Length: 189
Image 1 (cartoon, rainbow, N blue to C red):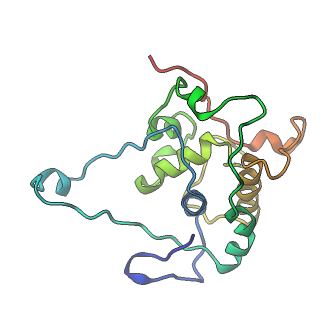
Image 2: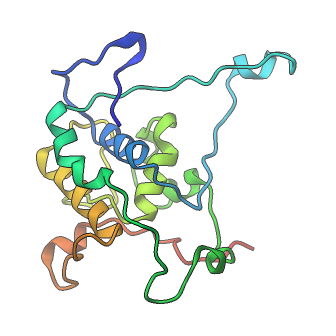
């Protein structure tokens, strides 16, 4: 679930940014989205002949060991069942899909501060209503060190999305800080 930085460094005493926490959660739980990540090829990628095969570079992030203990309930995957509303993956194929960059650009005022490697994961977490931003839902602060409260909110929302715990009440004051995408139900023409 957790890995270190490039060069084999784990850096156990380094603070975790909010975007690193979101990426670790998505990668660890293999969360997927209908959004596709949009990447811009670098200059090096443009000049490489088509015959060569480039290795993908995995960007490693740091999470404290204690964080993995908090994540233990999430690691046990729930058996797949048909939701109560009868909607199955085959019936959701008609729903619109947006590129990950479109989702984050239309959701966060500071979308340009999100590192390129994290765009897809942030879009996935946003689309699944996992992100909680206090005091302003439009500001992610991706590079700011995550607080214990922000990590707890991410875990809580993930448990909600998996149906393991009840969501916050609609009239709860904390409910207003759950990020919801404004483009979630739009149709692409």
